[in-house]
Image (tube, rainbow, N blue to C red; front, top):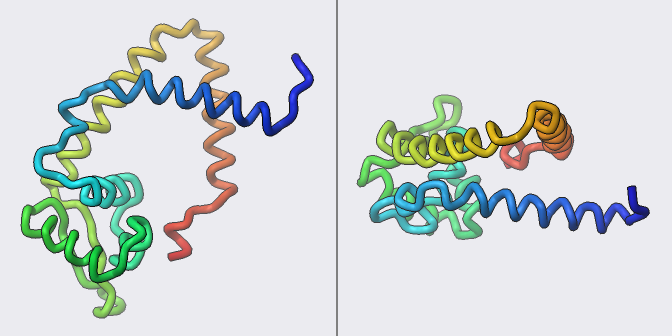
Length: 154
């Protein structure tokens, strides 16, 4: 193994991650182009799909917009039956947003396409190398858990 710094190794790993992402992204362009969904709406959908229900304040923070702006975006999504807005039973001043069944279905198709493409790639890897990929992903997953979840802090 060559004698490179940790920073250089991190950069090489990021470049490899970019290449893998490019291999996975063209999975299903039609699913990526959800009909009549703005980028801000897609971001909210992804935050809720990946992390579950969230407070309005958290969504505003994730988008980098004011609470009023986030509320307007969410209002349009509720009107289109993409999101459901609920009161927090413990504090009625708090609004919790979650994907509706329709919103969940929209993103489930995209997620499934990504899984299918990933499965295609993984089945091409010999067993011994696939074990290494699995180990590397386990290590990355553990690192993610140690860095904490910003959702819990908001």
